[in-house]
Amino acid sequence: MIGLFFTDYGEYSNQYEKACRQRLKLLCDEAPYDPQWMGALEKEISDAGIKLIKMRKAFLEYFNTEQSVPAPPLAAAFPDFTLVYNCPTTDTEDIAQYNAMLEQSRSADIRARRTLYGPHRTKWQVHHLDKNIDISYCSVGEQKAILMH
Image (cartoon, rainbow, N blue to C red; front, side):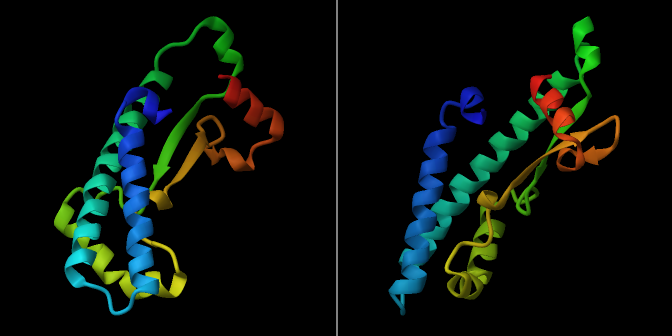
């Protein structure tokens, strides 16, 4: 859905994923790795990652604003909800800070054989406002009603 609002979202997403794959290959398969090459990859990840985070935040703000607009009379039959963006990098908007986090997580990434820090670790959640609970705790009927809303 975010790609419908930001035409370059797919481009940055692909760039981010490609750089993450290359970084992980370098970390896990090519020890010792070239630190300059690693730094360049991490800068590319940081740049694309921050752009993705900003686009997601803008989309979330727009989406939740539209949800609060008074709805047609039939919509009263459907439960109110909000979309929540739960990302460990939500507050990271500085490339140097993002780079430092990637550098600090290198050994953990090698052990896990995946990148543990970044917007790809995002959890999107839907929150049922009337009951004040996550949608995963709602009945299937309530979940369907929220989707139809």
